[in-house]
Length: 282
Image (cartoon, rainbow, N blue to C red; front, side, top):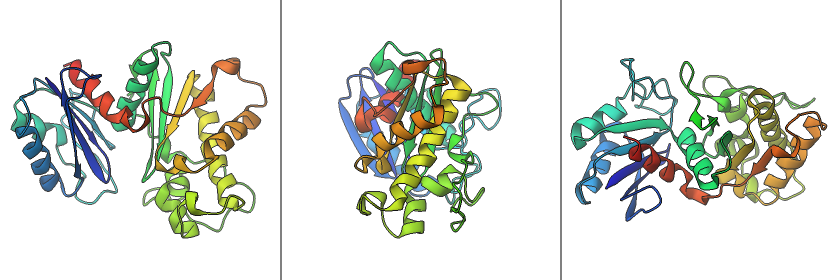
């Protein structure tokens, strides 16, 4: 048996099963303080059959280099109380099994590519409480000095769009500061899906996200960008992003129609499936 943890900003999804595609039990606990969250996680795993390894797909930033002392630690984050917390170390110590760590979006990218089987280069973008992008190139999760943080790149703002400073405590009007769920509520007082279809917010958010897709295609040449998260539940938003990205490309990219923007194949299961894939590799 293996275990998986998809740790998000508001909740942690927990799972156990014999392999990534066969989950026997699943449970959700709220993401509270580190100590409270770890206690909830441990209590649930104690009620399940023993696992041989655990995959941790976590919100970030997170240390991914096992040779560094900050491996498995949550790094500087706007989430109160979590900066510097040794997430993986606490799990390894209390569960007594190996823990494999990835960002939640990198793990989701791994799961989405695995679900397809024909794609080796893929980006996974989730747009919800925050915005994160996982990146898989030639079958490997991209790390570099740390891991991708495309949620904090700065999109070009259309002319006249200067009345909103953005909500990111680090960058103001980065992508997350402009297009995440909380940013939309802060700016317009409502979720995007609750605004009327003719509201200017729809086109603006689609433009920000299309710019991100265009930049990903230009910089990485990924075959597929999977776009999910709560904000994407907004009717017609996916189609707006695709259409705007095609306008931005203007027929230039040599990958042509091999570049695709799609919805998650695994629906909401991408992250936890990715966590189970991590555990299976321990």
